[in-house]
Image 1 (cartoon, rainbow, N blue to C red):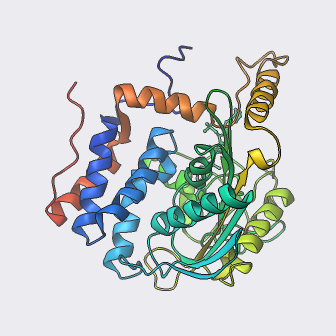
Image 2 (image 1 turned 60 degrees about the horizontal axis):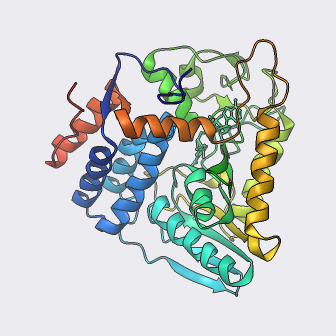
Length: 369
Ligand code: NDP
C-alpha cells in the first residue's frame, strides 16, 4: 500500500473528482446566493470540504441539499445574532439564534480557544444552533493552536437506547484532537454504530447495510436501509450486532446530551429538530485545554508521539496489515485528495449541480482527465 496515494474508502467509476478549491468555491457560491454572508459561507464550506477531504462522505457535500432546504424552508437563520448569554474568564454560554451550525460552532470554538490561551481552559456551551457537520473540525481548530480540543453536539433522535426501540437519542458525536510532533491525533466518532449519513450513502448506492447497524420499527435487526428510513432506529455503539445495541455508546450519547443540551439550558436529543425546522435547538459543547498550563508543550508532543508510535509498532494480528491511529487514515486521504482531487459520488454531484442550476450559480466542474 502506497502512502503516497491513499484512499480510505473505495473509489470507483461512480465518482467524479473535483479540485478542493473548486469544491470550496462552489459551496461558497451556493450559500452566498442564498443570502448567507460570505464569511459565514466560507465557514460552512471549510467544514464540508474537510469532511470530503478526509473521506467522511456522510458529512461532506452530500449534506448540501439538507442545508439548502433548511434555509429555503426558513429553519435556519442566515444572519444570526450569535449572543454570549453568560461568560466568565474560562467559560461561556452562547445562544446561536438558529444560525448555521458551522457558523455558530466556529464562533464558539474560537472563543473557547481564546479563553484557554488566557486561563488554561475554555469551555463554551451552545444552545439554539443547527447541525454543525463533523465534530472533528472544531477539535482540530484547537489542536492547530497547540491546544487539546474537544467538541460534541447533540442531534435529532435516530438512535434507540439499549433494550429500547424508540428513536430517542441522537447520533451525538464526540471528537478530541491533540497536537503531535508531526501532525495530530484526531478521534472523531458518532456514539451510534454509524451516523445516519452512512445509511444515506448505502441507500444512494443501492447497497444493503451490515448487520448490527440498525433495526426496523419493530426492533428487528435489518440490513435494508429502507427499514431504518421507514421509522426504524440506529443502534448505539458497542452492540456487537446484538439486538439491544451497546450500553456504552448509549451512555456516551447521554453524556453528550448532558454536556451540550442540558448544561446549555437547551434541550436533549429527543426534542431536537432537523435543519429544515424552526427551533431545532441543536446544542454543542466545546472545550480547549492549554497544554502549556499542565506540561511543557514540547514534552507533551514528544510523549504523545512516542505513545502513538509504540501503539502502531506493537505486535500485529496475523490477519492485519498495520495498526492505525485515530485520524491517520483521514489525513492520508486528505493528502491524496489535495493532489488528485476530491471524489464526489456521481448522484451527489448531479444533485448539487441541479441546486446550482435552480439558483442560477456556476456549476461544479470536475477535473478534466
Ligand atoms: P468512523 O467510524 O469512520 O471513525 C471514527 C474514528 O475512528 C475516526 O477518528 C477515525 O479516524 C478512526 N478510525 C477509523 N478506523 C480506524 C482504525 N482502524 N484504527 C484507528 N482509528 C480508526 O466515524 P463515524 O462514522 O462514527 O463518524 C463520521 C463523522 O460523522 C464524524 O466526523 C462525526 O463527527 C460525524 N457526525 C456528525 C453528527 C452531527 O450531528 N453533526 C452526528 C454523527 C456523526 P480516520 O477516519 O482518520 O481513520
